[in-house]
Each structure stands twice: as C-alpha cells, then as structure tokens.
Image (cartoon, rainbow, N blue to C red; front, top):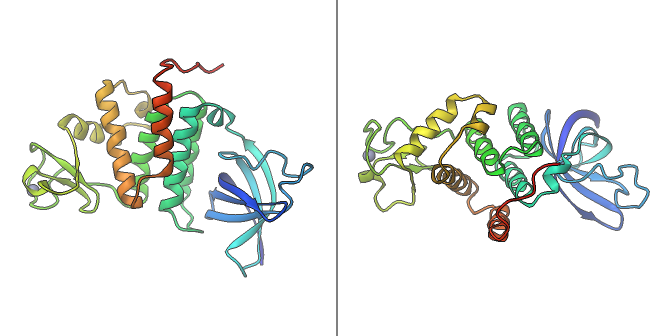
Length: 261
Ligand SMILES: [Zn+2]
C-alpha cells in the first residue's frame, strides 16, 4: 500500500457505478494509471471540473497493491488546456494523440520523455499551433521514443542505399523498402520529398518543426504517412481518426476556423 504523488494528464474518463468516475491518467512517473475518483459525479464533488480530458494536474493516488485500479486522493489543476477542448480540429488531434498514447503504452510503464512530449503537444495545440502539424510532430517523436524509429537510409530487405525510386515505408520491417522489394506489400508509399522531410524534422528542434513552412501537399503526405505508421503499430485505425475525417468534411464548408481570442 502506498501513496504516490506525480504530475498526470487526464487521457480518458467514464462513469463508474452511481457516483464515481473511472479516470485514466498518463503520469510522469508511473506511465498510464487507471484510477477511481470516488463521488466525482456528485454535484458538490471535491474534484470539481478537474477531471476533464487533457487536464494536467498534480495527482496524489493511493495504491492498495491489490487491484490494477488505484484511488485518486487529490487532483489539483496545473493547466486545464481549455482551448484544446473548445475547437473541433484541436480536440480531434488531441484525442488522436492521446489514443496513440493509450494504445501503445502498457499500464505502469514510466516513460518521462513520452510524458514530456505529450505535454509539449498539448501546449502547442492550446497555444494555436496548427493541429495537424502538432500531431505529425508528436507521432514522429513518439515512434522513436517507443522504439520503432524507422530507418530511412537504406532498403530493409536488400540493403540498397537510399535514394531509390518508389520508396515505401514498412513499419513491420522497420524502415524503407525499395520499389522492387516493396512491390505488392502494404508498405506506405513515400515521395522523395517526404523522405527528405522526415530526415529534416528529426534534426529540427520541436518549435522549428511546428513552424517549418511546407507546401500543403507535402504537409498532407507527412500527416497521412504518420497516421499510417500509427495505424499499423496499433493494429487498426484510431477511432479519433474517423472523428477527424468527419470534422474536416464539416470544416470544408467553413474554410476559416475562428482564430484564437
Ligand atoms: Zn530492396
């Protein structure tokens, strides 16, 4: 039995019983933690609105050691990331980031660097960076941190050094395939410009990557490639990706989303 204190981000929540709430946190020191917040759904809950999605807080939880569920003792808001929840595209990309995190990390696996990356991504979304670029930059770094960094310097099958035409990214093989080796596979086709961009983004600092000006076709290829990588790692398309596709169809009728206040 132990009381733990750490920073945590709310990454999921649902009702439990009559008045409790089941809350998933991604924490700095313990990775993903599933917790029960007692009486959190009562009107006068001591948690107030603290347990909203994306909220960063100081979490104190009690671990009995008898169950995978811990009990939330305190959760004090450090940053609510309100703007991420108030805008459809930001909400959708934020949900995608969190879904990747949830699907690709086991419970209680401490990865402070991944926690830091998630926090930086939420901050970027909250401060008005382009949501799709934030998700791309998150995915590129998360894949590295999770140990799936693809090799983009040679064909993983025949060893031929890049550049070669008709390159494709094979997540299972761990990197690029040349046109001959990738023929007929479900590897993700990648333009020469996109391979160069992946290389460049790896070398850039976080903020520089977020601001790097790109032609819209290349920007879209980057996003589609990283979404494809995540879909393959997870084993299916994230649910939030479908929500995003619907959001985009809706937004295309209103091409200029309202700027931040
Ligand atoms: Zn090859």
